[in-house]
Length: 230
Image 1: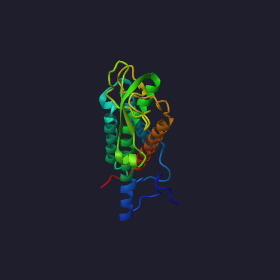
Image 2: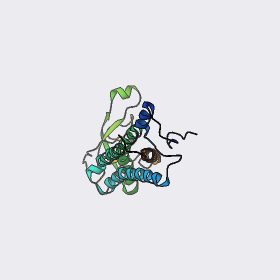
Image 3: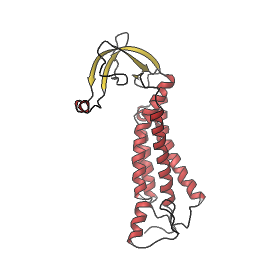
Image 4: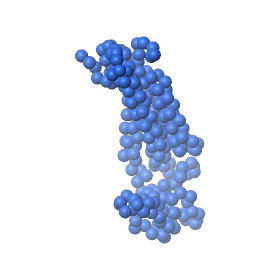
């Protein structure tokens, strides 16, 4: 009986079809189920990759290095992970999926972590709106535009970052707008509205991380060969 494509096949096939199948999904040249050692190697690779990407974003938000806050370090980890899978001759489909998920996670993780950090140590102050802009006229016609508020502090000092959370179509210059500040000054301020409503974004990032780890494990497992590649 043939085992599914993620687990392997009873014996190596020959011919063009088998070669293309191995190139896309990996050779998986083992009998029956993969060994626990091979599965452990795959799981470890996935966990290390996810940990490197998420850890870089978390470290940047808590400690402040710009390369970590912007997700650049996570992008490097994601590319390195995909390069490793390509080097061990993993299936190209898995390499592409891992790279795509890794890049998305690298860009998402810092923003999710920023929300968690501000929810934990942020301080709320009320500023005054000085102007309101529409992010995109085309998006406005489609009903999906963001409104950006320029805000100044109580002492009249303008914020360098425009605020979109809590900035609505009805907001006008002179209105009060609650803003969350990082007391350490490592994160840009955000609108207080929705800062603590992070379970949705956190759940999405966790799902993405879980999928990335699973695809990494499958890629490593299916890269196993009984013979050296030609």
